[in-house]
Length: 165
Image 1: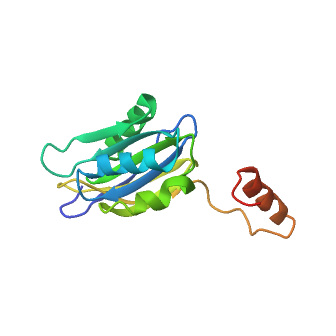
Image 2 (image 1 turned 180 degrees about the horizontal axis):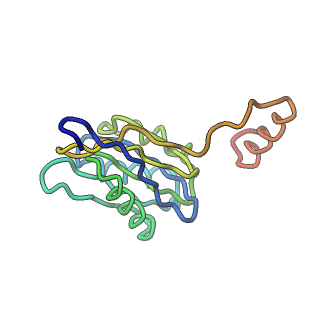
């Protein structure tokens, strides 16, 4: 790292079972309890793991959740990203669409980078002070534009998941 020039790298998000993941930024340790309460209040039976990286004080990765394996996975990903005030939320038995607005309404949440089950890479800048999550690579690049023949498949998928009648 040159003086004043950050090192940019990609950090793959580990997600061996293709669970849904929400990655965001928040500003306060209270995030852990508030997101936990939102999750259990949003979807009965939801399984999730949450990890939040403190940016000051002891600078620990704080965790909570209803599923120890998802909580461990979230903690390992937050530690790999290694950027203060970033949270990783791993979901099972629910989709991001079921909880995303509630998570965004948590007063401490300032930004959502992604909500996906796709392969994800976190794009991180490192300086002498620490790390900054710049964004994410969510899935792959588009291979074309939807045609009239593709529309029925898109509509069928939404109905299969129960989001449209």
